[in-house]
Length: 312
Image (cartoon, rainbow, N blue to C red; front, top):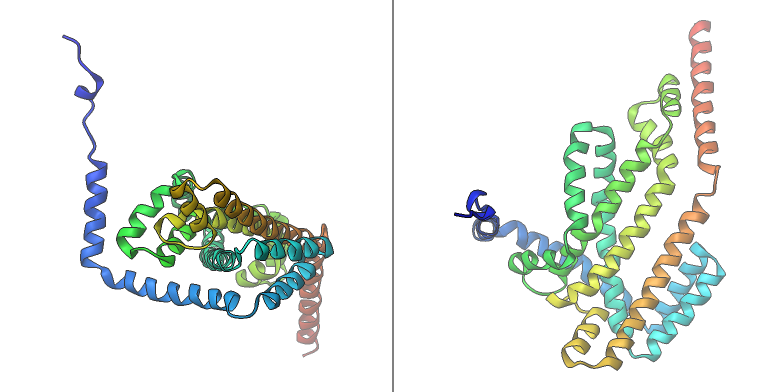
């Protein structure tokens, strides 16, 4: 008699366990999720009102100036042309909703991800826990995040925002951790030898040297946020994603193409601005020079304190 492998290996009811856990969280602890929904909803609405409240020409001018200042005249020119194309396609409100969700998700992801990355770089035990969790978060299909968000938070922008934060946060943690770990040990030891406290070493030595890698993480967080915000339109996320989802449900090829063009323009603007921000704000060799100057100032100040103590 032939035996199947399924007859030998015991079945793991992981789906039932997960459903039971979600039901327990939903029924016994609704208050934290109500608080999260209220806070993130207010934060997202504030950014959305900031982008949709003023006239279009004002927002176009402000975004163009920001792009020009951070990334140069070429990106500024592309920004104004791209935004005018969005206006001509009647996608302005949807594009601003998408941009507000992306900015809100990126800010929350960075506020949580960068400190966690710094802590993981300093603690081997936390790093051991963090790495498998990041692997799961980065390889899990994006649609899977939508299911528990609907159950816990309902439909709308808030569950879309939370799902986006979970999906986009791993690069911020991983690249911050990598940047801190790549700081030369000799530089850190020199700062400690000159009397720098751990917090001073972190702020004035490690973070400046890790800034290029951290900025690469910022770019990835923003781009992943945009991709997830589009998918989150399936749970009421609104914006350009809802244009694409509506076109898909109606098999409207033209409207779907128009929505896709709007997403491409927003994605290119965000990518060019953040990429050029990394290259322009952190030129090669500038940060190490600042660190050396700061370490030298520590040595000088310490020498002056030593001379005063000898005189006394």
